[in-house]
Amino acid sequence: MMKRRDQLELMRRRLDDELPPGSAEARELEALCQDPARAAELAALERLAVELGALRTPVPDDGADFVARVMRRLPDRVPARRSALGWLTRPFALRVTPALGLAALGILVATGVLISRLAGPRPQPAASSASVSTPPAPAPVAPLDPGVSLAQAPTATNQLTSQLIEVRFMLSAPNARAVTLVGDFNDWRGDELTLSDPDHDGVWTLTLPLPPGRHAYQFVVDGGEGRPDPNAVAVPDGFGGQNSVLTI
Amino acid sequence: MAVELVRTRSDAPPREDANHHGADADRLVEERLWVELILEGEVNLFRRLVERYQGSVRGVILRLVGSPADTDDLAQQAFLRAFQALADFKTELRFSSWLLRIAVNAAKDHLKSKKRGESSLSSEPTPDEAVFAGHIEDPEDASLSAERRAEVHAALAQLPWKYREVLVLKSVEELPYEEIQRILELPLTTLKIRVVRAREMLRKLLEESNRR
Image 1 (cartoon, each protein chain N blue to C red):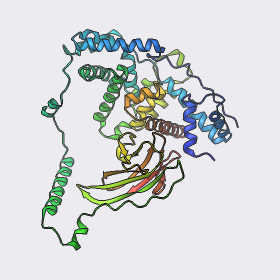
Image 2: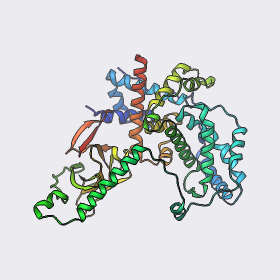
Image 3: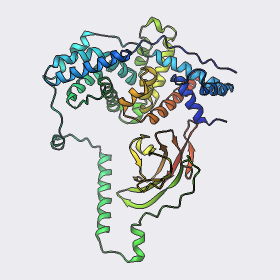
Image 4: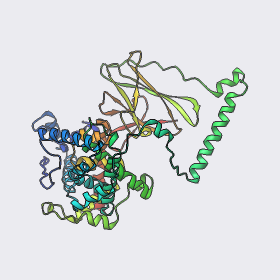
């Protein structure tokens, strides 16, 4: 039985003309569509693709008038390239709502309290473990089947820094060339959060400060499809796949 | 049960940049030359770029904001922003990708300022806007009724922004993934996942609206 995620990917490839006729994948799709529900779904997506394409009608054109209006608004010459110094010294307007102002004030007060506690008299050893703890050592990683990526459950440390909690994400992927993390905390952008494996032991890690709460995430290995962390709680993503969930 | 896998796109007009590779390369070289000359003070050459891309820019903005009343002004803003930032344009990029990135951002900024927050980006067009979307005259589009066109347009406008922008660029403008990557600066995997999710969401939205 093909996974829902794979079904959707096969349909996407069909819709995007990426399935050569007669290919194994095309035959796989035809077999999938022996199921009337899947056939109806694909037919609906095919109809939708045509309907969306038909929305691309020319915008009523005022032709030269539009061009003339743009040209009239242009300055005499292109402004010079913006320099870093110019950006630093240029004043800008900041709009702040009362709610945002209060929140900023709260963060300032909390930061001040934290700094004063950290700068105060060093507590006795019995009390120190309750203030700041060091991140726990990584748990041993289970042996892997070749080619299979296995995620080490993210390890939340309780190093409190201005309302953020440092979370260490670990993925054991010995054959991977690149591993990235995507999640609702970075709008699922795949190229921002890169895990590293400096000692080349196949265990990729990334420590990330996150606000308390519930976070959904996936790992992306070698730019492929996102995959959930098998050692974490997983929930359906609503599209046949699964997201891992971390609550801190 | 077998499924009919055949579809047609004959009702969609050709894209402005759908030329073959040779002409495409010539166009890139030509535009880089224009940009260099504009930077040296030949401001009037910017007219060529506006003439070439006004259709794409206005089309993408209309499909994203759903409001013809705002489209012209936003398109003008996009060209103006492009002109003002032209010194920062990297010539290894395509001018069209760079310009469409500016246009998409102008549309996004407009919707944000209009109703602030993500919910505003999911708002439906006003009835007038939806009616407009269904009233663009094109004899070749007779296969899609004005009513259905308005339904699809309204459903598209309900999608969260990040899904709407990929669907407009991929399924309406029919740009290749590589081009959309350059415009939105997203990795290919993320882009394809968003396209799949956007289509699923739109299909479900339309099914729900049909059941009502």
